[in-house]
Image (cartoon, rainbow over the protein chains, first blue to last red):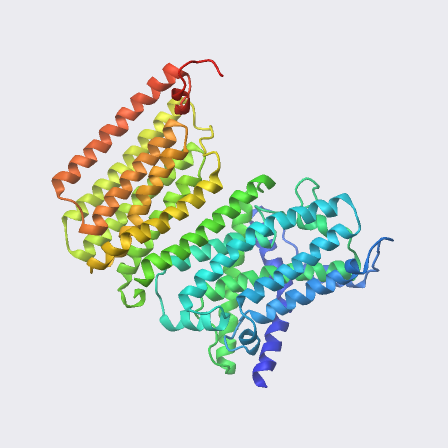
Length: 314
Length: 224
């Protein structure tokens, strides 16, 4: 019973901290670009404003269009429940493994693309088409990285994987190095950051994610934006907790949890700085360059898998 | 098993995997200058691996090989190629393969092939580096794939040099390096080869007005 309470608290933490992480990335980016950064609470204020606003729906919007924000938010929330945040002993993580996690993201994306085409504007359809193109290429790379991880730890369950990696201590594994690089690239593509997509603009030639949600307003838009921030945080937590698991709580005492929260906070701050530096240094790619970017991610994951078989097993 | 090895032996394996990654990066890269940079990194990685193998096996002449590799493959030849590319004025040209994604997938297939071929050899050996034999063979074959898939002369030369990196790496991995005389000879050959290629670039360009060696297949200058 206690474990379930902890799982719920962790999920709530995920949801509560997601806008903060986005704000942190934005703040570092502003510092790097010599601009004055908005307050760290700005995303929360934006969400409150959007929740207070009236929803404007087009006349020909179908029920799919209205249900989509809730489906996206729900699927992302469930995905957040699966990922160990500050403690590995999660009853929710025992239920669903990392392939289910990919499934949750796919479900959210599917409805997002449907909603983009639902109202029938030119931008929505274009955005959906681009999103599906990119995700069709990103998903194999992600699954390949996940399989590498699963082969190393002999499990696809995230808790078991992290437990295994913690137990063996510091081991240099080429397979995990390449899986990490691959997952970083996939994460960038899937969360729509530079160089794949630019979350800060509505420039019609380049936008992907923004094009699909142009028609949304009010609380619908708030839910989608929140889910996007949550997704970014989920990828961040996945990367820091799987590849740098040190500090995560292995038993559920108050002291261990407090330490783990502090450590994961610090790791995410560092990751946020890296992301911001990456986004400042790189320019956005042309859309037709994105397949090459994702083929690189797939190749990295494939090399990870092969180097596990060739170098680590024998 | 990997967990039981000391940290520097794990580092040897990780570096070996990174050498293979640079081979894939060479296959995927279509700009000349980054290609030369990746080649230099590959040389550096091979040299560091060699130094670690020297430390691991206690064979001190391997340190000399490592230093030679750094001087030649990581510094001199990249510098030479860089200067040639500048003088030929092709540092902004695209030298890519026609179907980069297909070439990468063929590359992955080659790695699997090498794994199967090297497996019986690996069972005969007990050294830490036995698993890297497959990797070094893969680097050789990936270098060959680069030679086949590129039309431009500079990219082919980089592919050839990276193939040589793979041979050197195979020698280090399988038998802790060749005899010093052989190694010196090969190094000298590569050096001379690089210089001669440099002269050749100008010759090719003077005679067919391009560095695209596919044009040498045609007998007449008219397009059919």
